[in-house]
Length: 107
Image (cartoon, rainbow, N blue to C red):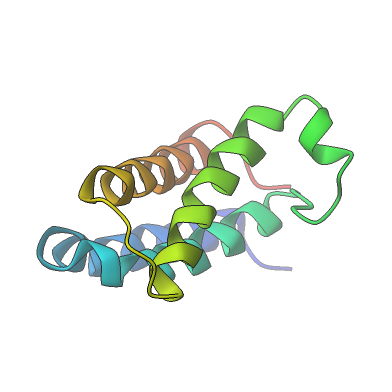
């Protein structure tokens, strides 16, 4: 069994590694932030593919992730995405990261 604090430390370290990328190349940082967020959400028990989850108590969390992920996919597909949308996605990932570390304990 893995200690709950280990994943938290790993996630904090991973996020810090991407902080410089977020500042210098925000669009390019989205994919890594998305991967980190998916890992965190799944480790905390969110089933992102389950339509019932999007209707449950955690629908705001799933909706926040969905909006950021949609922007990330658009960037990855080479679509024209505004800087405001990229910044909003980064803010969404950051909010989820902070919430999952501070508010939502390990299972």
